[in-house]
Image (tube, rainbow, N blue to C red; front, side):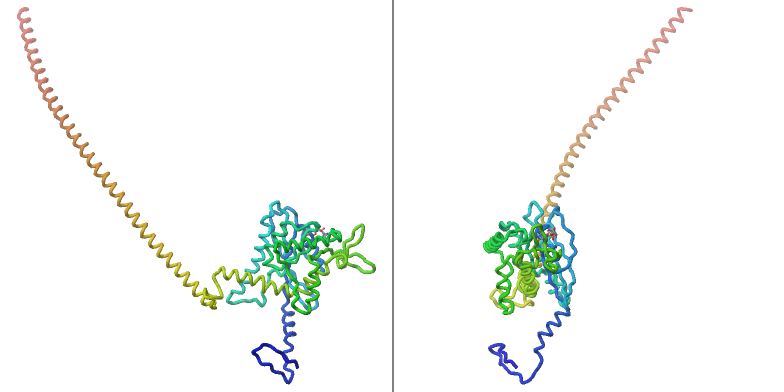
Amino acid sequence: MGLLLISDDLRNLSLSGHVGFDSLPDQLVNKSTSQGFCFNILCVGETGIGKSTLMDTLFNTKFESEPATHNEPGVRLKARSYELQESNVRLKLTIVDTVGFGDQINKDDSYKPIVEYIDAQFEAYLQEELKIKRSLFNYHDTRIHACLYFIAPTGHSLKSLDLVTMKKLDSKVNIIPIIAKADTIAKNELHKFKSKIMSELVSNGVQIYQFPTDEETVAEINATMSVHLPFAVVGSTEEVKIGNKMAKARQYPWGVVQVENENHCDFVKLREMLIRVNMEDLREQTHTRHYELYRRCKLEEMGFKDTDPDSKPFSLQETYEAKRNEFLGELQKKEDEMRQMFVMRVKEKEAELKEAEKDLHEKFDHLKRTHQEEKKKVEDKKKELEEELNNFQKKKAAAQLLQSQAQQAGSQQTKKDKDKKNASFT
Ligand code: GDP
């Protein structure tokens, strides 16, 4: 029975018989196997660079995918999940494609939908984690574990779109750069192209995924494989007869490129690193590095912190209380401000109304005065007219009198004349 040194201040005891906790690793394996695993790959690369073909080749199957056109107005991400089984291990695989990447004239914002997608998956996980009733045990984890970045086999150098996109993604996801369609580039050119890419990544401060070398079992293979980065891959699901065996290959008039032949391309290296050696590390890195960073920033943004300004531990409860008090204080301040504002507005309105009342009074007085003046004028005029009328009546009466006297005198004269006439006739 082995003696295990666990910690300096713990006493080491030897067991005198079999206890059975040495089956713990098996228990872990059994538990994980029964649950199955989630693994999510993001393929970033321009349309037609060979993303779908490589995925089919890697997992030895035909995933459903329809060829994208080059007419997409922007970049959109399309995720498809599959349930795969090998021996008794179930793998829930999600492949995310960047549809329309590199197809726009203005590519400034091409990285944004990718960053948003990655963040959205982190956010969904964080929301689940923050729930009172969490169900992380059977949670379908959609966080991206590996980002295969497809570099065009130009033999020249990285495009600025590649550098910008990788730089924006490197703190959020494990980037594994690969040279796509490596059968289209000559061997000596490929070597130069690889070192050019690596030096460009370093000089631009792009952090790609480092194969872990801290664990003994994988240290050697990971260290030797790192030298071959970025892997130059060829994809094909077509089987070609080579010797007396069938192998995945691409056939050309001048020869055959075998996908799984390490002299032809790095496909095997990629499969080894991505699936067979480091799949668990990629999952772990996603959780402990990238998700942790997202979670920390997000919680800090929300005002949570582990220590107070004097670097003393600050519990979630205290943060909550402090935030609550801060919020209530702000609310009270806003309420006071609003009350003051209201009182001020009422005063202003009152003053305005008083002013308007004064104006009205003045206008009323003015109108009253003019009305009285007008009234007096009219009364004077009336008096004048009445006098005129009286005079007129008097004159009229005198005239009538004169007229009647004249008529009387006239008729007496006529009678006299008639009498005279009659007298002369007789
Ligand atoms: P995607 O749009 O990035 O998913 O690209 P596809 O996987 O649909 O591939 C587009 C075309 O490139 C197809 O005609 C493939 O046969 C071809 N192709 C895929 N992989 C390779 C490769 O490694 N080498 C060459 N020469 N052609 C490839």
